[in-house]
Length: 161
Image 1 (spheres, rainbow, N blue to C red):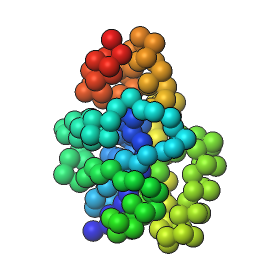
Image 2 (image 1 turned 180 degrees about the vertical axis):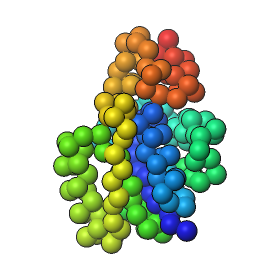
Image 3 (image 1 turned 30 degrees about the horizontal axis):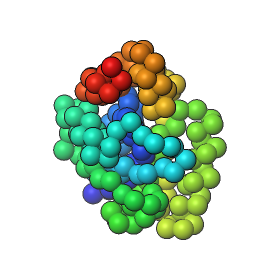
């Protein structure tokens, strides 16, 4: 069974993430969704425990049910990849800008840990979705429901109302 790591902050999980997770679950035997702390992303809306709950809720009725696990890891994605003994790291790409950033990380991850990266393109309708945009829309009273699973919409409304 091929096992992959899908790292991110998932604050919150959005439909672009769900798209990549579903693609990965069709291609590989098991997807480890790794919640990592990104020091370049200040603060956070949801705690790690809340993110785990939201991810599990978002994927409960999806096609990938039973083919994923969610774990929080301190440190680098390569450390999580080694700890989970995965075959690949999976990264979603929205655009060419994402590729530029992800390619540098992929080369570093391969050099440091010997773990190759597989890129999965987001579906076109999800290419403009980001957790930062979702948080900003919700914070200013907008409706992010077209970008996030239903359970995340409810959680955002609870926090920002």
